[in-house]
Length: 280
Ligand code: NDP
Image (cartoon, rainbow, N blue to C red; front, side, top):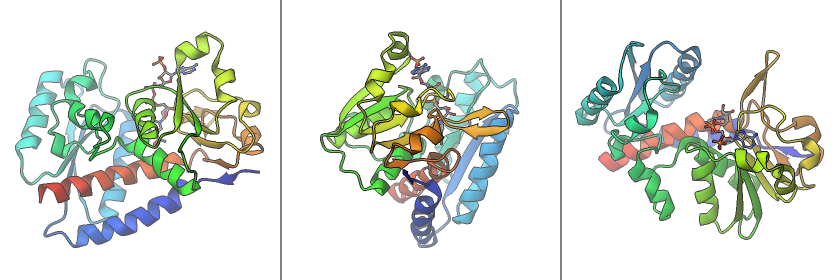
């Protein structure tokens, strides 16, 4: 039976350290959070971010913009926050209204205040192994792998999902650790090759958003499984991996909820603290 890789205890350790760093600062860091529209999911994230931030002594400043906000006015707003010296970090809540493309916005967040690590300048630094700010979910995955104690050097790692926020940055970070990385995506599934790749994984990272995509019996015995997926199925939250079957084969597995999720928001706060230190 696999050991559970829970995010909360790791997050608590990191938060204790962050709290000390924040209290040693001349003034509390300020996180400016932009919420466009009234999406219920985004509102829930805001609530949990605010609670985490305030627990660390961080000032959480919420800027709610109306549903009618267009790309230009959002960019203008971001520029205002970029120029405001009292603001240390900026986050844009997802999802944005359909008319706004996040990619067109993220490049306008000043790299020094981009605590989601999605400005192309910050993202590009990952390629050169010089990242200062890492995309939060990818950073959370790497923290959990560290917690498992695995030495990634030469390991067969399979990443399922190649999104900009998880799959791609995690792949680059794993390469930096000299893992042998295979990246699977919709093309892999359509070619009928997902099972074949997953079965080889000594470390499996899944970030797709489809409940039960990864069958428990595909998990290699002794594998480490990090399930990033969040899916609501019949009032329950589940990941992308069939948990009950997979936990009988894996050596470590993240629960959903309770695995990657609790760490992601902590990584955001760590990025804010790092950004603030650099600004000081
Ligand atoms: P995206 O929708 O941006 O990306 C999903 C990825 O999965 C894409 O690369 C897509 O490929 C690929 N994909 C889709 N269908 C298949 C398939 N059948 N087989 C293989 N690959 C497939 O999602 P995100 O990366 O933003 O999020 C992924 C999941 O992680 C979601 O459930 C999300 O809720 C969760 N999440 C959890 C976080 C946490 O803190 N725990 C934080 C962020 C996300 P293609 O683009 O080619 O179609």
